[in-house]
Amino acid sequence: MTTTATATKQFISSAQLLEHWQGHRNLTRRVIEMFPEKELFEFSIGGMRPFAKLAIELISIAGPALKGIVETQENEFSEEAFQPKTKEEILTKWDSETEVINHYFNQISEERFQETFNLFGQYEFPVYQNILYFVDNEVHHRGQGFVYLRALGIEPPFFWERF
Image 1 (cartoon, rainbow, N blue to C red):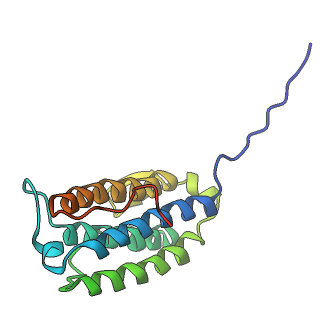
Image 2 (tube, rainbow, N blue to C red):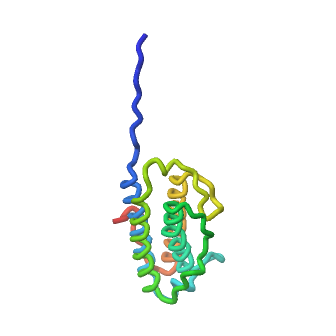
Image 3 (cartoon, helix red, strand yellow):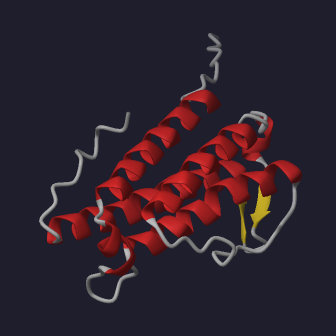
């Protein structure tokens, strides 16, 4: 009888996951930059929210969610705390939240990625699924931004150029 030992190999490291996510954030930042000021806050298609509102949602999720995961606090989700009036305010907050993400993400141990956490007291999933949701949600909203830019006659950046 022959026995075959199987070793589990890790598909992606937490550092690689963070790099992947930050690549998406870099691309989304470039999309925000491409919008003319007025259209960033006012332009929409088919009743969708303007891109500024979508960016505010993304800003309101990522850093606060990671902080909640690390500190095991189920704070409610809120987009009300940040009410920018300019593109520059959005970009400045985007950059500061990038640092918040780096700070808290790096405090999540490999084991914690498998733990269930009730994000914002509403979404009870393993930590890794919550983080993948943050990325998926950003890609979804950035796609809306691409459509808006094209409708405004502005060529968006290539989706694969994330750095």
